[in-house]
Image (tube, rainbow, N blue to C red; front, side, top):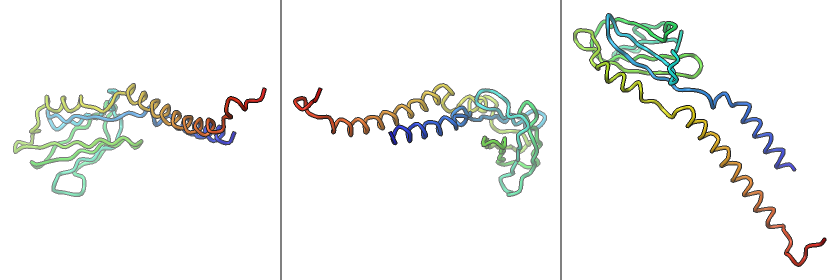
Length: 165
């Protein structure tokens, strides 16, 4: 009886934290136009609205610029030197996006937009696959627990000739 109570308690604790199972990843893209445009979104294409953003020049430890994305998850900045730049977007809820961009002599983005779009479409497992994986883990742990418990019970079963009716 103690094992069943313990098992139910552990299961209820896991179900109480189910919101972590439905979390999602992030993805982003950097493109150039009248400046350098950063677009940040979650993997379900929802924009990372009003997330904090920091722009770093590769040679400096302090941010070149910091601020927040707009409601569409976009931020525009104008680099002042060529080289590698790092962009960090953080929504304050555990999602962090870090992108790198190379700026050429004309202060434009070196990487083409097609390469950025290709990297933006690469994401981790879709939601349904992660949910299925979580359910499989729960069933696997349950199977191991019940196999272990059944092994103990089967060891105590009397032989056929000694069964009392």
